Image (tube, rainbow, N blue to C red):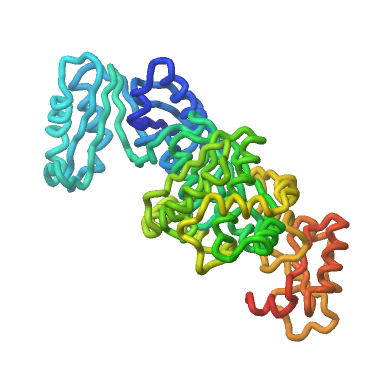
Length: 474
């Protein structure tokens, strides 16, 4: 059974005596959740001063490197020693083979009352190991012998990883992230989660099933690998009617600003309804025309939100955000998401007037805002498939989901569609749990057939544009 010694983030031990136990308990609970998601179990745990010792039934070291609140974690072997000679001999026996013919160094940390110092321990172990090595190198050793002595128990590290630091998720409330799935919003969510906040994802459906599909895959990747201790939610809201209203009512230069303002308003109402403590955005100051300081200030003055807005990326540029996205493993996923809300990509006002924003908001049919809020659907990110998100967007889609079964419903299958099955040849009962994408010449016949299959309980879609769209995607 693997044993681990975990060094918690430095700010946790500095909490008050009343608060500190709550942080440790939450961190252990989050570690337990991470282990269970990895098909492992935490068998035992205890707090040793500013560290956590625990055992599991299988290796979880990689997972520990992604639990917020952990500074460092290592696999250890433990030993209850009698005296310095006994301790040094035990370390020698367990490390001799690893340092043979190599440069090494010994580093010791010690707490408790002893007749020896940390330096005494390191020196004695070094004396025993040196004859079997190629020498000592304290600056750049090939092998590092690392030991912690706590009272009469020694912990010898066999491998270590660095953790992300921060606070355990769940100690600082919960927040709703405006989530497109591109580079900015997932990184913003990661930073807020790092500060101990449970983050859920609010995604506006803007008319593209492809965009929503990939946004959910990003949320799932982030939740699966970083968000432990709770079940993250993906909240899907249909925003298409609001966009249409904006294009009808709002002058070109103000469309992006009003779009952002209405997204705030709807998020604020949802946050109040579902008891979120804050709204999080991926806005970076000046990154886009609608994100100038004057515009962000004008929007907040105009909408007068009840919920606080957090902008963790405000001072970062795009390159920094993308570098972080790569580091946390989201880049390949976010790079598939395209910008779907640029309804006025040029000539955007950079110093909006709050009164003008208010005037445009008041011109919008408020029933459409309520309709958008009422369209809200909540999904458990960990147990939901991206195909389920696509299903919520309607029968017609503009792309082919991964692992979908292509069904050619044309009577004349020319030109041929690669990797497709003719409708007459398919045994539908064998595809009850599959995603079916029906394809015809124009998308009209496939729409009718997909609708019929939906009524029969199948996850069926019609490809918008028909065979031309399919061959173009191929």
